Image 1 (cartoon, rainbow, N blue to C red):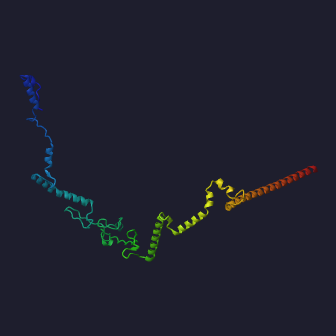
Image 2 (image 1 turned 135 degrees about the vertical axis):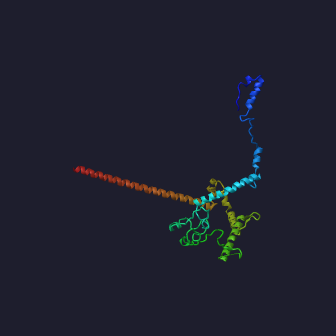
Image 3 (image 1 turned 45 degrees about the vertical axis):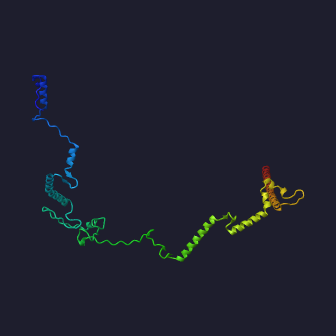
Length: 320
């Protein structure tokens, strides 16, 4: 801001004239002229700047700008490549690791002399081939031919691992026969298929509901024999259907008035059961009797021995 006279309002002929002069002093630029307004950055302005470069051709739309930039790149590209080449020669090998040829640099390059490594470092690696070219050390190696590692021996061929895909097939689909023991295996398969068919047939065919008979003739004949025996014993089997107290009563086995036996088989069964019970009781009674006799004998022997001991003691006391 310029020098502002604080008494400009006081020295003015009128108050309005003083205010006008004061405003003019505030707007006056120190270098002369009015203060410029700041430039506003708009979206349109930025889009125009972006459009200066063609994103497809990677060139400036303005030919003059493009020529200036191109000239600057041409003057600096040689310097950049030389600096990169010096760095590569300083940090990397002085020969191409693929072609084994010496790298040719610029005029200031120092001549590199290859120093052969001792034999212990020739094979100092975990692989037996060159990891760049994939060739063996006997074909591709930095050492001379007479100092390169020998060619590794070929590994013994392993036996082929048989899987479901490469396993030899047992059946030839062209001849429709087995490769080994065709007749025996075909007969065995036929018998097994016949057994499965028969088993499935009899699983669903046991009794014919239309003819009311079994499909198997032997089973039907056995069933008919069973029914005949059942009809013959129908009377005795009817007694088993009665209540237990009535079925086991003796009045159904013989007539208590006339003594005529009606069911000799069941009567004999009851008599045999009673006899077995009596024999069991008789044996138990005989055993108890023998135990009593043996107990009495043991008691008498014990008493006689006690009496004899007392007599001996009495005699000894009288003698003294």
